[in-house]
Image 1 (tube, rainbow, N blue to C red):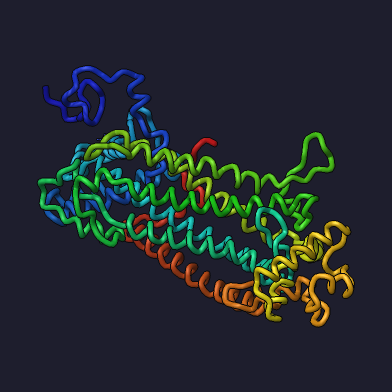
Image 2 (cartoon, rainbow, N blue to C red):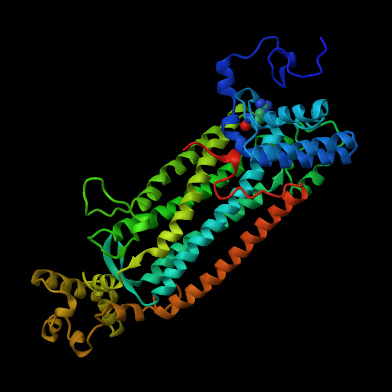
Amino acid sequence: MTESQPGGAAGKLWGGRFSRPTDALVDELNASIGFDRRLYRQDIMGSIAHVRMLARQGIIPKDDAAKIEQGLRQIYDEIRRGEHEFRLADEDIHLSVERRLREIIGPAAGRLHTGRSRNDQVALDFRLWTREALIRLAAGLTDTIGALLEIAERHPDAIMPGYTHVQRAQPVLLAHHMLAYVEMLFRDLDRLRDAYRRVNLSPLGAGALAGVTYPIDRQFVADLLGFDGVCANSLDAVSDRDFVVDLLSACAQIMLHLSRLAEEIILWSSSEFGFIELDDAFATGSSIMPQKKNPDVAELIRGKTGRVYGHLMGMLTVGKGLPLAYNKDLQEDKEGAFDTVDTVLLILRVLPPMLRTTRFRTDRMLTAAGEGFTLATDVADHLVRHGLPFREAHEIVGRVVAYCVEQGKDLPDLTPEEWGRFSPLLVESPPPLTPADAIAAREMLGGTGARHVADARIAAAAARDEWVRWVDGRAEALAAVSRRLGLEDTDDGPEGGPGDRNPR
Ligand code: ARG
């Protein structure tokens, strides 16, 4: 049997050794085209780089390579215009593009897959996609950090109660509280950059698992695609999905942090706290209770943390116990990652404008900061400064508080005579009793003193600027890769391009 069109009885590009078609249910289970179609751009980028290398190395004729590259660019445009038909029968994005290429340029299309396997191809596509996702996430984080810094800048002196166990503990500056989240998000940025460093290696050339028999130039392909190097071991190259775990665990930590902030937004917007009022554009109402203004956005941030953690656990579980090298289990690496990045990116777009439009009721914060014996530690410290051992001072102030609770008083309500019952020192030298005293006493590195917080804010703003430069630099480097490959219009927007849309 001679067949110029590959396909065999199975009607598949790999069908040569099959004499019967696959069961329809197997096709349904096996196909990843429904979700990996969103890798179309990365797939075409990788193929253009590969085919240029094949021609340069004399592995395939130059005119065939030119036809292939032109055809790939045409497919790219077709997909972006929404004209490409993603068929279940195509199985995955790799075969879908190759099928269309054959329709456009004929049998020369069959040379594209020389010295390549779908195993190194999919690893390449997913690394290209992941590194872009990391940069987009980093951009979202820098914007969120910017919004937090703006709050700190707008309210440099606002005092609020600091909490432990959700019990009022000691006064802190609102700006200091915001800067705590900024620190968390800086660590997240660091994790993204670290993940970027590891993902940015080219697996192409690993072939199915053992390398290939052609005189390929892996480094040339890696350079063309803007990778920092090549994966060192072919078996590892095709089966490593650590970069997905890196991405998902960084996202899990981001959500851990954002869900903490979300929880505070929820608490603070309650009438019990009354510390903030959300803008109408970032709150929702109740279908039955006309008075309600609910912090749904914050609740969804808190709630969506669950699916992000779930996807991390899913990926860890898919990877465990897989013998070398590629196994089809690895096809399960994508949907969770796509959903994670879609989810976190959407949150990182909603959160900054929500923060920027939130009204802080600093009067209520200040009142709360002075209530509930938040100055008790400072009174004890005051006694220590007058010579008492701290444990003794703690004991004395504890008795003062017990007395106040019994009398229904707060510390500032006590008369000198009442203070004198606990220690003469407290009459000779009156203790600090206002939240502002507590703030002023903490002008130390990392503390909530206003001067130090102002310095910390300025340092954080400078650090943020540096991260913005890093993000812009990487984004420009990635855009340059696309231009080198002749793909100009590559801005898929935050939610990805035509192949990217998951039904939600
Ligand atoms: N759709 C596959 C995946 O996502 C592509 C690799 C398939 N390789 C194979 N030998 N079946 O993993």
